[in-house]
Length: 274
Image (cartoon, rainbow, N blue to C red; front, side):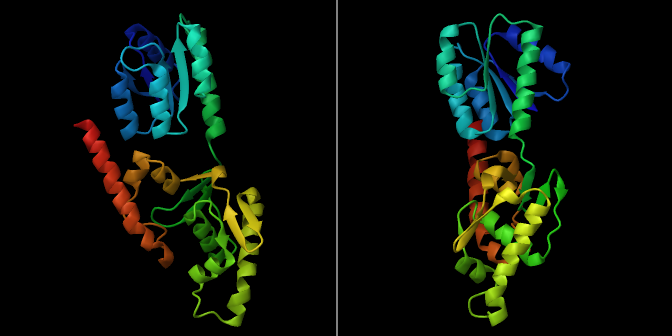
């Protein structure tokens, strides 16, 4: 778990760093006494867990946490403070936990264990790979689809990012309105069933929602390089190399917009480092 520590007291930073050395799943990727430097780091790097002091000069930990959550909505935030009066404000901004100073080794171990459990709950079993070829991964392994059309339908739903896909749009994207035979006009029902059966068969049936005349994927139950990219994740930004769901011609139009967004993200990162 990529971890940063932010505290204007160097001794407190050192205590947590020593404890992390005994817990290899926590990788300290940054230690900061200046909140502005911490924000610049989070903007440019992936961070899973941030331990923040609250009472700091310049920018306090509450404001720092709010800015971090704007950059990375899933970052785990734990506050460390010597002042109980900050507890209510910390809870209002939905911090994951709060620890009071002075703390000891047991307190630190408790914080780390809680952070580990928070991350486990955040991890999602389903991951969609969209940069390059499209694939669905379940617990890290590719899912085998009953047909190429069923896989394409899922890719199209992921491309819509949770917005309902009408049957009319599904047919237009996958077959083309002007070339449909009578068989193809009714074949979409079979494709939807094949997708539903595939997802149910691998224990992910709750992903697909079928409505009258439309369907969609519950994207909150999954993650993807595309979602991470759209959230501003710089690691996902670098993963995008100009290919998006390359099996499908209908995805080609999205590449230009993705490339434009990548350039903006990279220019913003370079500007923050100047």
